[in-house]
Length: 143
Image (cartoon, rainbow, N blue to C red; front, side, top):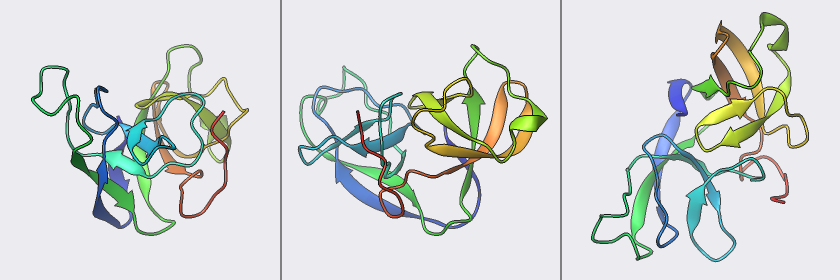
């Protein structure tokens, strides 16, 4: 989960990718067909954080309905996020850039995409980050 912790944010509404589940606080990006989807280890420029859970049992699950997205309004925006269990976070990683594992966790063992910067060590499994690859300020290709 990408929980907002510091900075300024605003809400924008985007059509969700049909037949896709979303969790509250999932990082999202544009899917290239006019909708958003949860981020993953290959996603590039991100839009913000999903503010609505979408389950397969929802009546609009198979539709491109609009959902609210929390978007950072400035470069000071920071999020608290879980670190994938593959590699533990250390204080030495503060200031370095890393990849995602999925829409709600970091991969501090990966540095090919470098979509987040660690700004604060919370524990071996939790960090504060800035999202480098935001659609408004970066051009990190989705692969």
